[in-house]
Image (cartoon, rainbow, N blue to C red):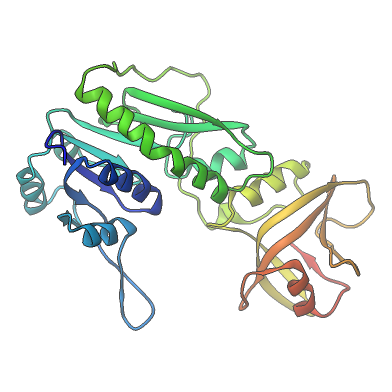
Length: 318
């Protein structure tokens, strides 16, 4: 194992885990990990461990799970690791007392081409907004969120039918390599961080609320409806209200295709045919459902959805 640099890794999600695993496989000296506290799990009163904590337990790497990042006991234990550098991937905002500890500072991996799409949900928002490219950025952590000097960037194209889940998988695959290039550039002093560009119109990527996930079927552009559904798939998932046989149920929609076609059906009408097509009428055509989940049921393909609904007429969404 490499003795230098001593690294503290800070993260919590599966996205974080890809970078952590790459560092560990390449035998970098991870002296400790900071991750989120355990969360209550609804089955048998068990606790949910973050993927990063699970990996730390498997590989016998010391870890901390602070509730408060400014707590004296946490800061004391963090300093005892005597890290040369800290690496952050998918974690909450760090106070200066944390990011300012190592001599080489702290750098963060962000899933967008900064300065655009600062915030908690860049992968979702780039697809919702119909962007054709995105990427990864490493930057030095400073006072303002996602505003530090850029170290490296890697750009990739977004597929026209790609979902947020599919894009995240592709970004995860290249995250480890950019983390290692950034790390080596910092410790060897071969990369000079540069300030983020000043842009007149900045697009942010805030945390997505439940309200953000509701589909607006009366949007003038079929493309915007289509982009929203794929940008929220598989999580947190686009939803609508399904009016079915005098019942109103929440209907999650995961994957769809768009059909540009003139028609005279009211917006939100559901058309079902013998070919197992389930289409929602919108202003420029139809959104054809491929996978969905009706409240109280499992996620299923369109054939099973139609068979479960049974009735074929007077169904609509809103």
